[in-house]
Each structure stands twice: as structure tokens, then as C-alpha cells.
Image 1 (cartoon, helix red, strand yellow):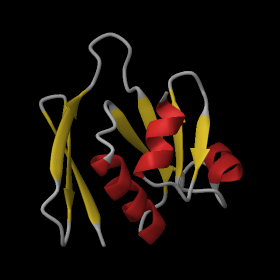
Image 2 (tube, rainbow, N blue to C red; image 1 turned 30 degrees about the vertical axis):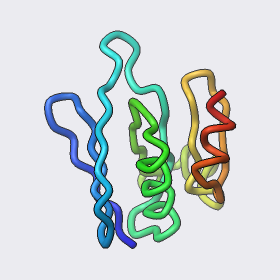
Image 3 (cartoon, one colour; image 1 turned 45 degrees about the vertical axis):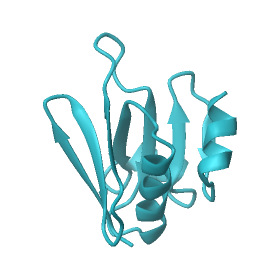
Length: 105
């Protein structure tokens, strides 16, 4: 399954190939993204993580690709996908909707 990400007018939208799932969330005006997904290009696990995050309706999601950043590569290279919140807490893959919801509380 391939997940595609579109950003339009400050809104974040997920479109998951092979599914009729689409949801949107807006970025907070002052604080930037609430959640960051560290991922790689051409990563099927990252695509699956995006699909789970869309189903969980995670707000204010930013995707950061670790491929071209040596520091991020060293920290997240073998762990991607990794979800991080604004407080710095991290959730490593694998996760499902229930795990994301429990982690967000």
C-alpha cells in the first residue's frame, strides 16, 4: 500500500492507495506541527505508518525524511518509521491505531 501526502493551505491530507480513506487536519497556528513522522523515501513500512496515522486522525503531522541528514540518519536510520510528539516522546514502529491512541493520551 502506498500512502501519498498532500499539503494545501496549511491543511494536511492523507490519501491511501487502494483505500477510500481521506482525512484532514490543520497545523496549529503558533506552535508548528504537533507530531513528526521520521521516515525514508521508498519505505513500505513508512507508507503503512502513514496509513495508520490517517486512520487514527493524528493532527498536525509533519513528515521528515532522514535520508539526506547525517544526524537524523544516525538517530533514526534503522528505526524508521518513528512518530514523535511535541514533547519529544517517540513511538517506534510497529504501531496500530489503538497503540497510537493510547500513546497520545
